[in-house]
Image (cartoon, rainbow, N blue to C red; front, top):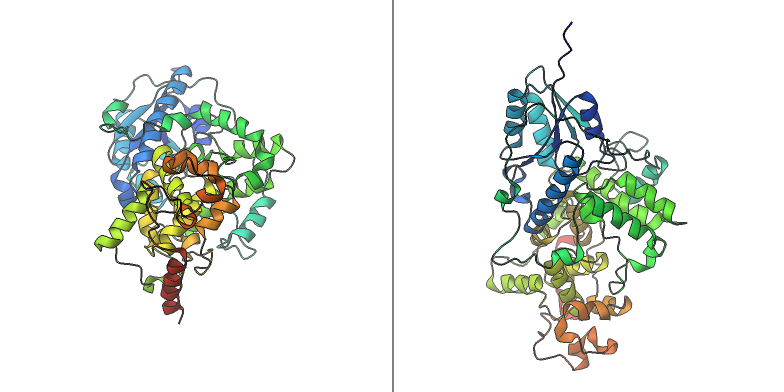
Length: 468
């Protein structure tokens, strides 16, 4: 008798760039020789095509994963184009019988999964697995079986399903096919910026890849017990800085949950933040256009300032460049540009400033963050912006307007401001938060774009029109 034919299997990778605790990889490796494929499909996401900062991370993450795969006897296949066409063609050319992938919940990936399942020949199976979240989105429901819209009851219900299963180890080896498909060269994708290299400082703070992600988890575990207080202090930077690693799937949330829980006596506050990722996915499952469309219809009538106006565009540009005259806002926006990330409290302050001080539509800010954040995530980004704008299914009230000057003082942001706004580096703590009011604004630092009181009154007046 001849030996049975062992068909090769495709592992379709997207935002799950790891070998450990990767259920799709485990299933694929058990089924036959594995062809790991990443398809750069920019067109499918439309106006949420991957931003510039995320592309920098993707380049380094793919290079890291390819090196890890080669250590296991495998390699990465890179293709650019429509993912459905590319995967279907590889499956046909290499007699593939199964394609394994982790489920994704962005609307363009949901559509792609459906199209791929319909496109494949009858003898080819698309096998989707869970593994990017603490619990499969859609599985945490009310007593009547409906998905939650509000975070707090969602968290309480999710907590009843925790802890997640222990994370899986990476396979010892991965069988290779007898023939590899053609692959693009990563450098030819030109994901890294040049002329100028505006991401030059990213590497000072970040190292993409699974190994670095696990090292970051372990480093944060030692300080996670102080997270509740330290996360609000930008000068101390008590944030986990795990968000880009989690977004690109270099480490699973289950791995993070277990390591952080085991490293400290009470990690509840951080674990609730980790669960926010799950909540955001549940929101976009219910409302796929959440990144483009507000939930509360009355806000569609709010009179945002006209973004076509030269004055408004100039003020928006000042916000993006960190030249608003509000030191905590300017420090945050410059940190975003320099390092592709913002401390979590400052991220909220900067977003609130755009929406309520400048009265610019939250969607313009979402677009800017999307392009500049290494951790730009469709669910998280949309949910967070709509929370601050008051337009979301679960959101802050529009009338609650952050006071950036007092927030800066309250959370002791002096050292943080000095790091990112060098014009103010010589000012003492009692004046650095509001040098204009203190009468010591340096000549090379701009005056406030608008006074806090005037901005607040303008925002409230706009809100009263839709309230009434």
